[in-house]
Length: 220
Length: 269
Image (cartoon, rainbow over all chains, first blue to last red; front, top):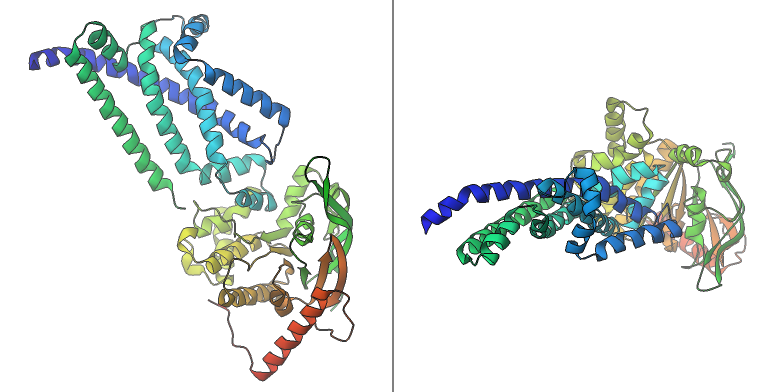
């Protein structure tokens, strides 16, 4: 029994690294592209300083459309795009492409939602002091919503940990893939338990870390 | 003392969309002159348009028509960037204080200096310290707003509004979230700022006793227009509006009370 788990260790380690790669890329892209998109969604929204109904409707429609794809269908339909970007459609790097595409609108919505929680009066006070839009974003919106943004990123990380299991379909690998291939398809229940247990631990750890950082950042 | 107009609202009007096809005329064709160095009050029932009128002075509300002149400059004619520069000359405080809650007291007061640049770190530190001394909160520089009482938070807001050395301080219901005791102390601070720094104060309040106690002149706003305008200490001229008569009675009481028992200093609460 123990021997079997030990023999599994190298494979588990590799799967963990693959999951780490997929999540790392997906979350980075989400922050770099989804974050600004979320800020823009907020700023062009009703009653905000860059209010722009057509642009708001267009961005909202785009975000909703990408988000309405079931992830596995998005994954398959993006194969040509993935090949163009990653050079291949197989492996964790390739799987990171559809993961990133799904993560951008997801995170954008979470960011927009969090910025809406910043009291209108605080933004207004900054305008009254002569702050520019960029200064309001950097010095007011992001500062006041920072703990909520950390929690949003935590939610995103956990959702995409489970999305990454689906990436096994394109040979993306990762812990979830291991659970499905060994555990589920080969009826090796103990392997399935081990991998799921590892996922449970990971999720708990991510949430714990997210909560801690958020609490430390929150002075409100 | 020479009389010099610092703020001039010239036939300003502002309406808002209000339901389908309807418009709410918050301010209609109002003109007002405010002198340098005075404390000027805007009185009126809720919904009369006094807040909209105040917010036109720094163009937080842009008038649909009319001009806004502050310190000789027509704000309505300025571009975005020029308006941002002009706003350094007009401080503002609010009913809900509107401080950054994730920033310390010192960072809040430094905010207007940092966004306009041109100040060295030393300059900023010195100016922040000066402003905090002015409002009696020098020992709270490192605290976060959540640790302060409402009165203290409003003092931080005053320090922040004064950091860029404005000529004008706009006060939108500054004491409405405070209890009576704290209100008196805060009004004493505003008077002190007015006298010592020669900052012109325009204050909106629905509390008539607040206006009676610190304003030299008051305008009563009714239905988006100036109902009447008077000097608070002048009781001989008959008042045209109900609010004007109430204010006269209140300021008479205040003077009598002051003669009976000289008020104690309430600089710090």
